[in-house]
Image (tube, rainbow, N blue to C red):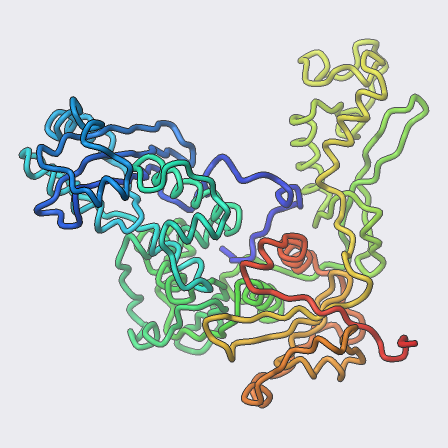
Length: 527
């Protein structure tokens, strides 16, 4: 159940935009856009429809058609869309495509940018030909507003600019629908499945509150990033979660489609909700991870700081082939630049190794997954053509090692990209006094500071004193320093590491969340 489910490894970091959409979106969707003769659905007519059909995250069909509205095409619509009366000559009337269109819409969630507009036009056009169409549409404007509260405007033009999307014909139906699809792809890469699912659930449903929970408890929740806490009647902490939109995420817990009995059981106990706001998703993720470990809520997936992690160690055998072993490391002695992969258990490391073997046709014997057999035929997988024969010399060491290198490339532990410690400034551009500073060194989270000047209490100062932020006086008295639980040297925390890497090595993500880096130095190191 926990909200801190991060990828088991780091191979997602440098991957291109995913082809499949997040599983948090509805399983069956139609991403649709209409061009019309005007803005009033009961009077104006549709002149073009473009749609994309999505099933289980995959794009399975694109469809577009012009429609003869049988009314004059206003000049300003021609200028806006680039559609001329000649392009509509010979096009079918809506009645001629109604059955085919309805078959594509039936049983699928309708998605549109400003969905009320497109849905109202569809509904009216179907009614005119004696057909009924009813749906609960998912509005991608509201989706953007909920997941990206740091931006003021959420029109399609602003989203195209925000993500640097490429479009040939703006205000054409299929092209605009394609932009919504690409926007959902980008969001699938940026947000966890449960965050996207929570947003979609709230936009598509009106959840009922738990019987023990006063509606005022929900009314006080903010539409901003942060951490939330569920308590029972006796004040026992049930659950800690995070979100970029606390109110929506909390309400998503109360939808009736609980996936397992534990969800339902928790919902019946919730009597009180508390929250802490954060300037962005970064601060919310850090706080959630630390709070789950510190407070051990009853219904969260157990997160714990482990003293021992496991990694891959590659060695070359006498024949020149790279072999892979799983070995344990003490987190306090971690030299991250020398490792491939970080795992919580040998079993987790082994399972991932099996996936790499399947993907890159690696040999189970050389990976240590299968005992060596004295056979000229090699390992069992080579007989199935799933290993190219490195185990019995049928494949050269050079060829095999190249594939091994490709498999391990995305498992190289990220080097700390700074000379020393940093102060990460986190701000909410919509709320000027919502600011936090995070002290981080070598992927270890040291403390959260309410004001920049608190860094001096930790024995640091800004590397460049000429570029200090001006912190409003109103912020000085608010907030408290939150220090890592480890007394002297915070241990390497795998969950925190994943969060830090997710943001710090992705400049676009840093910019989107308005995060800024301040390099730090020890005063005694100054010349």
